[in-house]
Length: 280
Length: 138
Image (cartoon, rainbow over the protein chains, first blue to last red):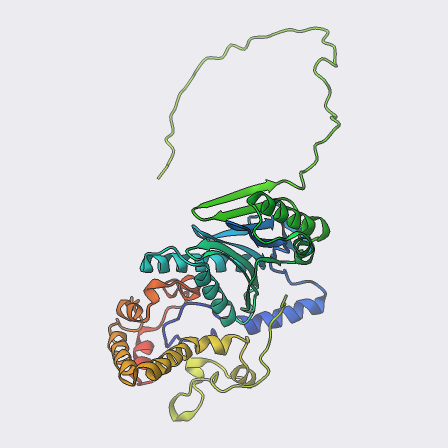
């Protein structure tokens, strides 16, 4: 174990997480709260994400708002992440955590599928995610909805930040999950058609958008079937920014022209130089 | 959402200062000591992350021993030891290619590869001190 205060380094440094500044950060945080200010918080996705299994595959849905405390940080962020050509994952929680987690698992799955020369399975992605999240004991705040179609059919998992997973026909996560789950509980049927499933997911996300402050803007959908992925972004612009109805500009010709005189300026070229740009 | 740090409130041994010659704390090399720094880890994950790889290996080897018999982990550990010796001097960058291949690190990517890249480290190791430490002369 090497401390930052050491005057000389005895062992070569290892990669990965470094806890050197934790104590310093705790002291700083205590000082700042004593003064009454707030430590900047991580950007969260404060989300509604959901997924549903239908007859031929999976429909994943997500809203597109990212919040930073009480402010909307991103009005159109993409929450459905690519894991592999047949597997996609929606992420709720801390935006950076979901982004990095899904990218790492996507890379690992790609290496794994190259090594086995098979299309990756959803269960593999699920196991990799849950083992990683459990290793970090919930400090990585990523709540995920993982869905895909592999050789065994369509699968849908929900993964919680501490590492527990559920395999279900319909799942919702995020701050708007209760609103979306209410819609699912009312209208979910087994073996739906694709259009019905898309409409159901769209309505569930819309319920989250309109009833939860942490979710908003547009609805993204991702339909995964055997051999085909439809990434519909945006599928539905539920919150379009309004168009101004009034215009304060004056129309052309409002001011009457009394006289007009044109004076030509006699200019001649005195000197011409070319300066080349340094484009290296 | 967890804000702030979770201090592990149980004191642990394993965070202690390096002991120099004569069994006394070596202020010149490892700085001033403080009991709080020594006993309490600064983050709940610090200890578990420090020992994660070791614990994984221990578990895998004991599983292997139970399934295939003692020869399997013995052979593997012998290969690990041989591969671990293929490296440059401690203050130079070694690729650990053989060790990575044996451990399977060449087929996976994790936070060790992304964060805190040792080749980008801001602190440069003092060559003499690192050699002395490695040879056990310190």
